[in-house]
Amino acid sequence: MNLTPTNEGRKLKRFGGLKALAVSPTTLLFRSHLGDPGDSSLSCMPDLSYQILGVLENIEPEMVFSGFDSSQPDLPHLLLNSLNRLCERQLLRIVRWSKSLPGFRNLHINDQMTLIQYSWMNLMVFSLGWRSFKNVTSEFLYFAPDLILNQDQMRRSPIYDLCLAMQFIPQEFANLQVTQEEFLCMKAIILLNTVPLEGLKSQAAFDDMRQNYLRELGRAVHRQDTGAVGGTSQRFYHLTKLMDSMHEIVKKVNLYCLSTYIQADAMNVEFPEMMSEVISSQLPKVLAGMVRPLLFHAK
Image (cartoon, rainbow, N blue to C red; front, top):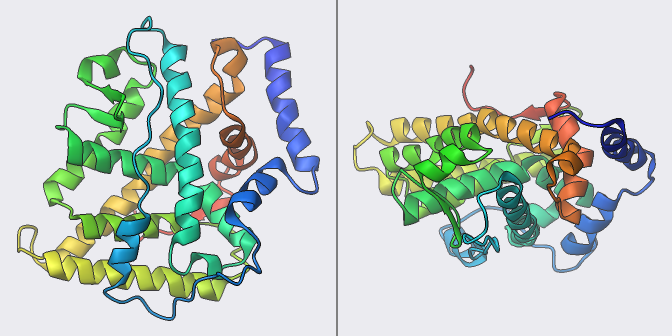
């Protein structure tokens, strides 16, 4: 769909305006939810123990509804608007979840915001895969309790190609019979799997936190090992390969998301405020290669 100069100019002008701000709207939004970096409630995390799984289970966000009305006409912008509303609600829950994640608030507040802004889509897509694996068969994608797409609905949707790519995740969960413990550890690691090229302000604390969660995933794998995929080391290999695959899958989603954002007026698609700010200020950096995915395996 072609953009008029007015629509394109309005969106691109927003990119330039955000860069010129000393404190961006994104920063203000995330600071308000993450809290003061000097907050005395910052958690300590010298080491993870068996208790960490209880914490991860307790802080896992509940499913949220999209507000999708299935009685509406089957129009692309109505589905996309519902997905965007869902993403906004999930983004808020990701911020709150990360705030409660052991070790995360030991990082500099700028690092906290950066990690969330670079990984939010990865976390959403990964969690979509988990909901789909746990609640429906491989023929469906479980975006929300009120937004579950079957194969025919996916085919008629504007995101059919993305659905095909994202279905790989629940299929792998099923192939590997991933446990709740493994999923929770992997989700924490995915938050820590994309970093700026220049590194982080709290690099040492970040490295320790990431290694702790990798060790905890190793413990979860050891507890699960049934020999189904060749033992503990093979299982860990397959789970880390799955996390590596998230980068390419989410890159496709990010490209579509940014393209839709730029064409939003012409497509009659609405983007909520927080999601809009993150897309406009961070996705161009991600797609331009200004971030570094932390891969477990060479391509």
